[in-house]
Image 1 (tube, one colour):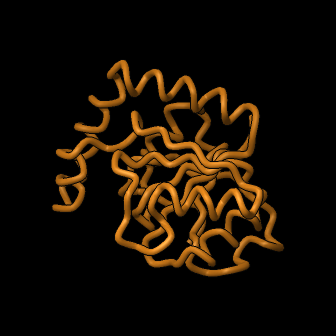
Image 2 (image 1 turned 60 degrees about the vertical axis):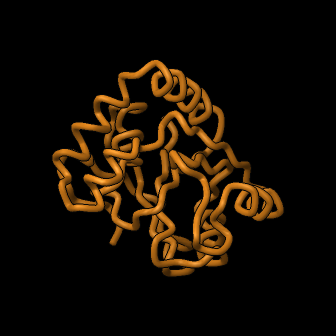
Image 3 (image 1 turned 30 degrees about the vertical axis):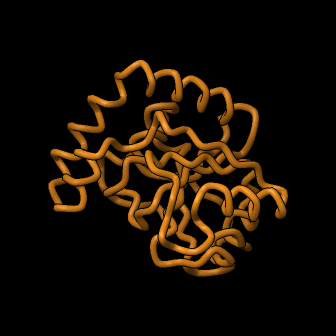
Length: 170
């Protein structure tokens, strides 16, 4: 099984973000945001897609894997147990199951990275999504896009189980 990368763009800019993806060989970025617009320059869907494609990285938006509004509100309020419950219920919906199936196929064919906003993967639904398609926590590796070249000379090691709450790379 290929490593499934995850990344958030909180605290970084588009240049450092893309450099991080390139450093680890990401072939396709999978946007798992419910809403693919951003106030942060370069991270709205169309601009992000164009930038990634210019760098040779594909872009796929799987809206069906986005966190529903009540889940986002719970996470913003620091109610992470509520957030996980809400998102868990969403994952059993037909829309989410279809998107998970699409994502599973995609990750078998290409080196993929799941993207959302939050820097910390332990408080973001992308970690839940990664675990849902792999069931092998060691196949998940969380990237941090705010320090250029962090991974350039480092062997990619196994990730973590988001159920345990400790990120692999700090």
